[in-house]
Image 1: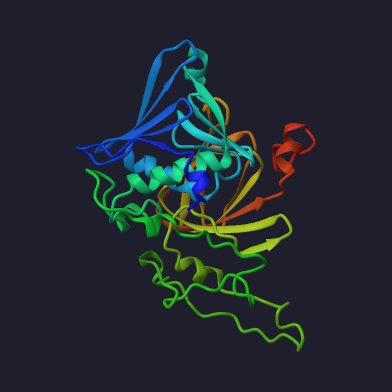
Image 2 (image 1 turned 135 degrees about the horizontal axis):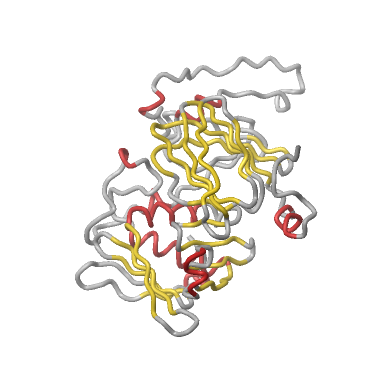
Length: 335
């Protein structure tokens, strides 16, 4: 959690005497929840009060990713109305700004906040609204219900640290392999995945330079879904594999090209225009398939059973600005 000076910026009510949840305010936006729904309210530019309602389970799963990923690369659409855009020192919070219909009707609102301020508000909201027994990072079959009145919390689950290697998983001093002892048993869907590790025979003096590990075994022990880890890092080239099950809780809008390699099973992707939401493509990826999401699209995935996906990210901090200025392409290749 953040330092007290940051948390002091959070504006929240006392818990509702009946439901037990706090209501949060950030700029012109108000966030409230009841037993089933999250309600986001704002005032339009011409003074009209508007509200948007989401299933609270879907809202918490999206909020979990936004918090855990540090607002990610570009757009984190909670649905087709509400979301955030990461500018890396500040974050836009919007309602309807990337919805063509709402934009044309003039009922959208976008406000920019310092990253620390919106992070602190979102962290407190996630903690207050997540009840005991519900893990917004888990697959629906692996967790309890998000519904009902306030009961306890699940702070330990929602404050997991992302697993980020600095060079490569398993290297001395780097991110260790997942094991039973580390609290990472093999997931129910991957009971048939071999757990043996490759043999390494480096020459003396190169023990920390020659390395390999069983990536499938590492992923088979993932306790979360739709949460990429860094397994190898070469300058700004990040290999970010993850396990996916059910629905990607956000609609990710790219600010750079993103590569996908489907390592097992399949994922179905809905791809749309980043700015308007107009549908562009339906992509079905099966084991061995590779696809790239261009910088002008948004996408949401559907995984019928738990699958393994390798995401390759170009993490250059300058790339988004190079694309904006036309110095780097929005597409992976031109023929």
